[in-house]
Amino acid sequence: MINLEIAKIFNDIARNLRIDGVAFKPYAYEKAAVSLQALPEDVKTIYMTGGRKALEEIPGIGKAMSDHIEEFVKTGKVAFYEEMKKKLPVKWDELLGVEGLGPKKVKVLYEKLGVKDLKSLERVTKKHLVADLDGFGETTEKNILQGIEFLKTSHGRTILGEALPIAREVLVKLEKLKEVEKISLAGSLRRRKETIGDIDFLVVSRNPKKVMEFFVKLPGVKKIWGQGATKSSVHMEQGFDMDLRVVPAKSYGSALQYFTGSQDHNIVTRKIAIEKGLKLSEWGIFRGAKQLPSKTEKDVYKALGMAWVPPEMRENTGEIELSLDDKLPKLVELKDIKGDLHVHSNFGEPDGEKDSIEVLAKKAMSMGYEYIGISDHTNDLNVEKSLNEKELLAQNEYIKKLNKKFQISNFKFQIFHGCEANIRKDGSIDVKDEVLEKLDYVIAGVHSLLKMEKPEMTARIIKAMKNPHVDIIAHPTGRIVGQRDEYQHDFDAILKVAKETGTILEINSSSRLDLRDLYIRRAKNEGVKMIINTDTHQKEQMHYIEYGVSQARRGWATKDDIINTLSVEELLKSLK
Ligand code: DGT
Ligand code: CA
Ligand code: CA
Image 1 (cartoon, rainbow, N blue to C red):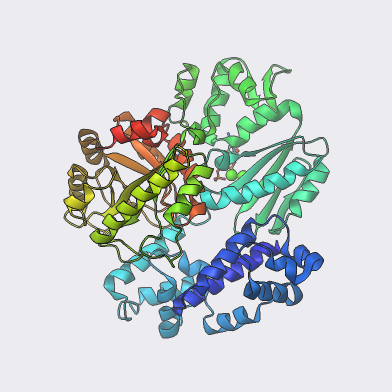
Image 2: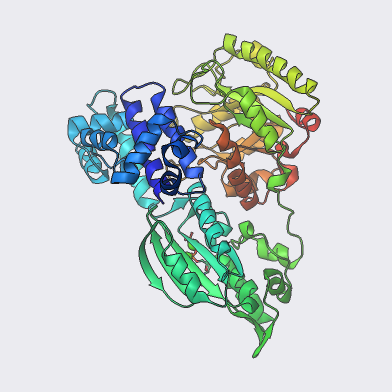
């Protein structure tokens, strides 16, 4: 779709402008890109039917952006962008995928060593040419090499937050076809795994041919691997494959069960079927030649003597036994979430790219929340704006005033004031106790020196949890899906102290997805409470909460395990 093509160009331009230190403009480009991505109609059609005027009416698209769009529609190019690319002809997608490499470093690598892509980066790094560059050093060189290795091993998988929105767009398009009677996501995406190998769709239709024809012609399809009556498979420009299967209505339940997986889960469900003298396949559940009801997944599980298993649990890690005993936990749901306590504002930097506290609070209200917690970075952190102690206190006063204002409007909504403080090397917090004391809550996280040895890192986090002001540990293991492994730590020791001190562990909904699912299960088993936060830097990111909830569900968490399902009063009681 042309909207996505132009959005990508705008994002690229923004990045280049940022490297050159241009103020404000990058943001305008990014805003326009976001707006284009969200736009349901094609901008080409908008321009063809309504001209310039219609373009300028799109939110986030001003005159300059309209110039670019018009040019792109007419010529397929944006000259300004083409010039920019000549100056820095590198494969951005490849290079920025390497953890530890930002746009500025990429520019230096290109100008000094001619690095254009992953291959040439690996070459110069292995020759140890990188360490000597200005602003790099031995550690950066080592990190880059590790980043390249990590990319190679995790290669071929797409993170949930990228795949799900694209899959939903396709789902909506397919749903609209009159030939499609039923449709669902299947595979790892339905199970909400943190990374997705390919996207699977399952459709009921009496006219598969039409559905398949539409599917292989979807915008973004780069290559057709196969097009048949029951299965088609395509490769998308975003780099992953999509599979579509069509089944008759009477097989929908068994097919959905089969294609949702996981394979490990299915192997056991088939075995259970055999033990009961049944046969289970994607086509149905059978006794001899007779097909038993197989229209819904519930039918299938019922025939096996099992309770319906939430897709997020289908990994054969104990859920089958619980399902047979009808003892599955009631997993936390998106609608249980009453607020988000990890949200960054533009306080102290009003011209920056984050949103104001007021805008964030309104966004939270529009999502049906009862509260929001503002938790900006503090003293130590220098990669983005952070608040010093004086500014934190000023923010505290400001939030008090805002809360009064919201109460007058007779709306039950609370803004909590917190911070995301830094856990220093020795486990101390970068904000004085007298200041921490004034806040409603404190999140603390490790943001630097991630490569410590296991005993030191564990002690560092434990010391922070023992601080009576620290309520929540942000992204407790430091991993970022597909980019960075967790740091060395003893999770059992951390859980023990979390339990003793009543410290809450975060499930961060951004691409960190940290805690990961298995750790969530361990925390739950130890009775350690968790909170699902988004780590929002722009208000739209508050919707990432969905990914955190999925992750919590994959970790079998129930409402009781998650403190931001509590009301304002109960929440306050559960903090230190
Ligand atoms: P992915 O795509 O690697 O993230 O993982 P899945 O789980 O989506 O795997 P995929 O797309 O290969 O297949 C979708 C589902 O179909 C899978 O979860 C289980 C089922 N399935 C596919 N092949 C087999 C198989 O050979 N045996 C069994 N029992 N199930 C299979
Ligand atoms: Ca799949
Ligand atoms: Ca597949």
